[in-house]
Length: 323
Ligand code: 2DE
Ligand code: MG
Ligand code: MG
Ligand code: MG
Image (tube, rainbow, N blue to C red; front, side, top):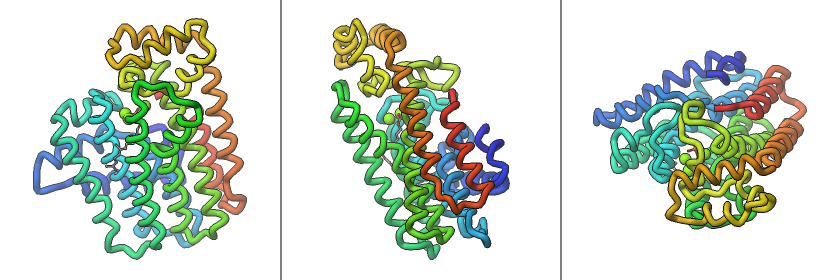
């Protein structure tokens, strides 16, 4: 995992995280253990727990035992949300592996997601973390659900750039932001610094999701482990496409395709081609760059040097990722 290689500061912590994840997905019901193990195995960037651990490490007498349950909780919530997301998006592959819904069907997947979700909270229920931590986590999940419902209501409808930003903040960036903020709270940082960490995470998360949306247009199946144009197929209109609907010489044709609930794969291919031919991708890449600059500028000045450097490297990684 690229991000693990880069984050030598927290290498051991991330190894402990992997072990903890395998441990936590165990259930008396074998099917749940199988699905959970499949999810942990198929990997992931572990971005959210890595950010949380990094922020927490800014404390002088940092102890992994104290932070680890929370880091595992964060990744379990993320995993649960992806299992549900893949059902909603009717996705058959993720990270090159079959999704839980493709392998085991929707019903079992939703229930396994619920299980992981509850496990996540069981893990920290008896820990004496700051009250703000639990509240933040609960609010994130409310936001995730709101973001998804908002997106659902806007299926196959043109949305404004502002609506797009609101939606991706809720479905992705807020969670990444809170992961940074919570790490800062655990480190005992003051309000001003935890706010700054939140902002760093928010801008990083915006850049991360916008990149994900670019990849949906630019990549091929093998590279990201999911088919190109899947967002369009699902009626999700992302920034490169929004921009193309404003500037493409064939914008009418594009709008007709992406707002057609019965569109087929050939139409998706055409919409992807129109978007690629427009200034949509360049426009969107510039936004990623801007968000990453804002993220780096938001970092608290007082962070230990190697922690600060790691946060900067993560921002650079997000800017370069092509999977
Ligand atoms: C990923 O977006 C969005 C994830 C949020 C999903 C949240 C749900 C609410 P994408 P990709 C489903 C339920 C939450 C729980 C149970 C914690 O663009 O391209 O679809 O990776 O991501 O599929
Ligand atoms: Mg999805
Ligand atoms: Mg989705
Ligand atoms: Mg996506």
